[in-house]
Amino acid sequence: MATTPGTTANTASTPHLRRTLTLADLILYGVIVIQPVAPMSVFGVLSDRGRGHVVTTILIAMVAMLATAISYGRMARAYPSAGSAFTYVGQEINPALGFVTGWSMVMDYMLNPMICIIWCSQQAHVFAPAIPYWGWAIFFGVLFTFLNIQGIKTSARVNTLLAVGMGAVVAVFFVAAARYIFGNPHDGAAFFTRPFYDPELWNSKLVLGATSVAVLSYIGFDGISTLSEEAENPRRNILLATVLTCLVIGILSSLEVYAAQLIWPASQPFPNSDTAFTYVAGRAWAPLFAVVGFTLLVANFGSGMGAQIGAARLLYGMGRSQALPQKFFGVVDPKHHVPRNNVLFVGAVALIGAFIISYALGAEMLNFGALIAFMGVNVAAFLRYYVRESEKKMWNLIPPIFGFVICLILWLNLSWPAKVAGAIWMGVGIAFGAWKTRGFRGDLVNFDLPPEEA
Image (spheres, rainbow, N blue to C red):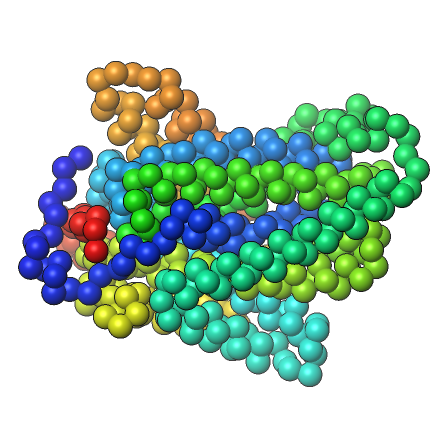
């Protein structure tokens, strides 16, 4: 759809985001937000629900999420804007629905750093109990904000260090796992195929139920599209980075849980399903029990910091489009070229929330907003590339339809507390939109797109 670009004078005089992120930076960002150790925290739950077929659920989930990733990447090519799903839905479907989508994403993005502060603070308190939980919460909340306010390249360098550190731990786990697996007796070829399909334990309904949980572990790849205005060649690199991130995470996750299932067969119950992977790591090599716990702390640190970047840039897109107060949310710091007000705002809300809600409720509420955005982007991609195109291609039909149906099924299966809390949040957003437009009689959003070169 046509847009009205800003004037040259405004472009020259107004501070704006700089295109400095390479394809590798974008993939690293996506991997850190999703986490290279993503399946470790849900391994026990998936094993219990799927009766041991964790690797199968991870692979099915990867295929499902790739459909939505393609929709995100293709829409980013059409609209290389920091607003992400907010812009895509607003431009292709309806500005009011774009605002609703953006509002749901605000909940998603602001809850992610919040629950990461909660998790990191709890784990750090275990390692250093002399410092109370509230002390660790303040420490991590301030640190996230300080690093993100330094500029996008600073965040990218930190992401690189985090990826290297987590990659090293995963590599050590693979070495220890191979040593344990091949150093102990097993019952032949069936031992290596049982994690994919065990005829004695297979139940299609249970495996599909576990897959719905596994799909949620991929949530976070959409954050790549919020960096469209800071990416080199965004029309190419956002699509590639989004799809490649899902592939990298999916393959790496499959290898991790496959090794874990070989070490700890489904027939053997876990002492604690929530921390099952730490017991698996400890069985492979005793020192890994503590190492994996520390690694998950690092992973949540990186995920929280990355999510705060995405939240700040989403608010920037909504502020610049006048869906939120532009004077506060729609400005960029001229020194570091980051939306500083938004980084500080997200950091403050996340820190306050870390003292109010539980990790479990926060995680469930996060999925409410994310899945609404996923459905919206799939519909936008369907309308733009299939309905409005003169030539009807199956490539433009199947991915968005498949992605929408999967996301709808997952959304319908969220818990009632998450649905109630999400509905309240959405009600507040709709009320704000009605007040701003005097009953939706005025323009809610201005979707002017920035020039592609800084």
